[in-house]
Amino acid sequence: MKVIDLIRMDYDGSQLHHAFAYEQVRELGATICYFRGAANVKEHLVDLEDSLVNDFIKSEEMWHFIIEIPEATITEMVVWQRLFISMCIDDLRKFETDLIISRKGDDIMILDKKLSVSIATLSRFSGLIHVGINIKVGKECPVEAIGLSDFMKGRYSPFGKRIADTFVKEYEDIKKATFKVIGV
Image 1 (cartoon, one colour):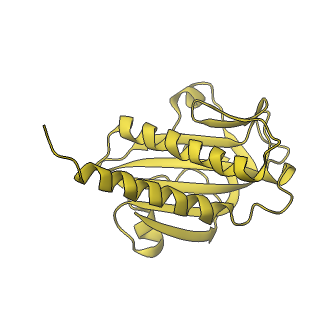
Image 2 (tube, one colour):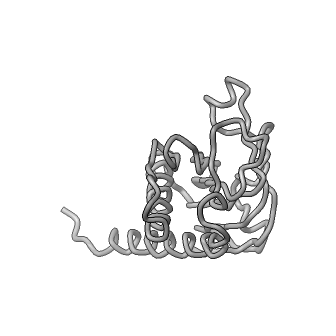
Image 3 (spheres, one colour):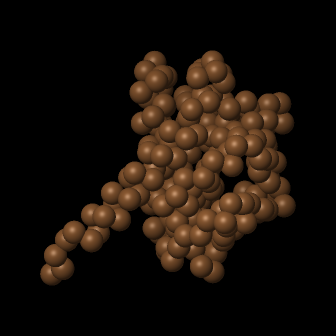
């Protein structure tokens, strides 16, 4: 899996598709792209529950992660998604020992406020995940939310690369583990 830093880009949901990394930097295969930018997702909302109630996603600034894994099933992608979310929580706990951080399904919660949005889905060729971690929530967010800037006070800049690198190490280790067993 390759880590791709796209630096800055706003997210509207249209980026969540097969070969997004290839469009951006000509990388095919398993990838994790990360970047900072606003989120404004309405037209390209993938979550069926949110779509049925005409919901939307809006944040002034987020860390965005788009993960693509070729030939994965939806169950595999949900498991990868939840692992990624758990890894984010583990990372935050290293630096913010006083916060009450938890996972509720595929969301990162700080007390009763959402720190993240997340979805796993499939294209014809691969599994896809988008995770957005709030940095600055803004006034138009439709839910009770919190951002990294509310408690990390400027220490959130290395977060994107650190999480992407950590996820790739885990992904590669898991893939390696699948090859070193004897079939029964």
